[in-house]
Image (cartoon, rainbow over the protein chains, first blue to last red):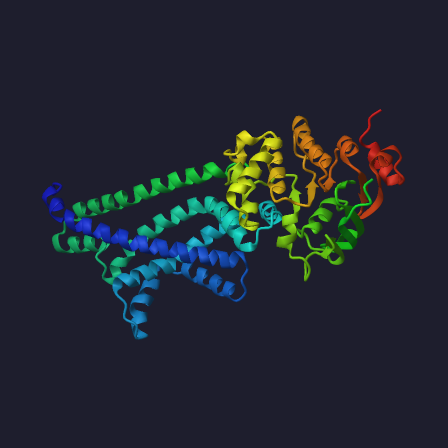
Length: 221
Length: 249
């Protein structure tokens, strides 16, 4: 069987749309999981009582259950509570729920890496805890956590492929549909892989770049 | 000895227990404004802990620390306020690695003391000039040698306009030639009348800079006397033995 180029050209626009949707979902999911994760990690770092225990529980729950099952709970569970949400919103909430736990752990490793000497040094010039967090702890934690945060972003983008189970027209579900209708398995899967690569490679390089930039300021006390 | 001037720091009956082991065992110490006091003693005798109790980096269990007549810590003068007047320089420099030299120096004055950036920058430049590093203001700490980093750390503390400076073995991790450049800066400060409490193992520096020598052993001050007198004829056996370790026949 020859490679069917006409088929590819015909459905290329559909792949373009699906890629854009994947980007949109992933972007919102990543942004919100970073916000959620950083907040959670700060709660853990400063040992906030009660809230700390809740956050710990959430992180374990999000990291130790499959996204597929988290999505089922959201997609079929939330409407049972009388709240109607779109499948897109559901996808973003699902990604955030999953990603928040991973981002929290990644950022916490950065926070814990800030040495006691740095904290004492900051205290000795009279910084209060807010100023300490903003000027000393946060920037140093970020520079250490960037590789892990980057890996999580890539992981979350890839996880969007699970969204096809809740009726979202992303790259994965488009591919499944086309295979179902035309049986052009080789062509569709090839475009699918290329689309994910085109999506993910720039992200990988971006993080490599950010890592180098932040490391530049970091090395050597 | 300048004992006629105002008492800037008064420590009474300071006790600290760490992991069930007493580190400070009732320390009494008074420092007067403009005085340079050098604390010496064997490792683990509580010198560093004593300094850290003065600016609240360590907590103590018993006794009081008064600064300018006010009790420090719990219910007294707030640490964030006290630390603006008590500068500290550490053995491992501890500059902020993600900030340039200038940002390191300006952080405290601008963010904590809320002083105008332009004014702080001018003072910072003046201080950097004084320690011979005004050309390094845009460098990151990793681009500097140990001695340079330590001089920047001194400038960072000085830019807060402190009334008392604490030095915790600031030359202990430096090469000999760098030790000199840091000690020269400290000697200059001493001669300008800065009140200084210095923990060091540099005996020659202590002789040159100190008004008073405080000898500590096992969490207490066992001897306290005028610098010249201390080095010539230490009163306690322990101090004699300690000083002897610095001489070779």
